[in-house]
Image 1 (tube, rainbow, N blue to C red):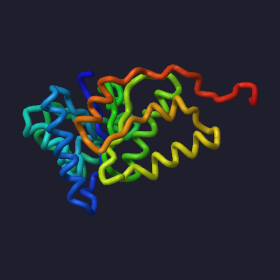
Image 2 (cartoon, helix red, strand yellow; image 1 turned 90 degrees about the vertical axis):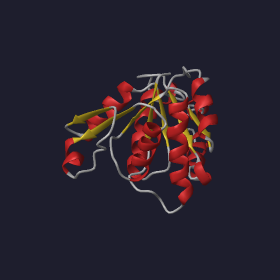
Image 3 (spheres, rainbow, N blue to C red; image 1 turned 45 degrees about the horizontal axis):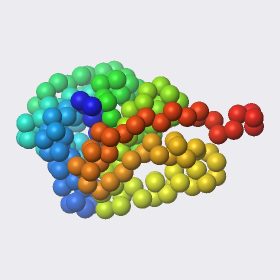
Length: 193
């Protein structure tokens, strides 16, 4: 694992602990020599994790659509900044550049980006590791939804196990480094088709 994609909020959130967690994640990535791949913004938790990684001597690769560059949201001091034409291109390039994915607290964009690349793993498009930094139990309800999907047989238990979680950045990175890909058919019961 050389590069970790971090999805997170373009806002700070209401609790200072979210910013502290983003800083800790950036420092943890740099300390391990892991490059950060993220959405290229200089606002919210996105800017915090990028700045923390850079300030700790790490490398940061941003991927941002021209639409957001035009709104002056691009981080000016990254190791590399890729400017793309669309959100779709952004997500595809971030996925291609990354060996693992982490979601910090965020909103719709964070949820969507994380779940899209997670679905790609479920379909066998790639076999990369996924983790939620579950700061202040932020992702408890999402994890409960995943468990409910298993109970209702919309999600295989092995696919549920794709999502690792911890409230501690170092423990989460350890889990990602030790991840073994799950190889299982996406469909629970092919005979029902």
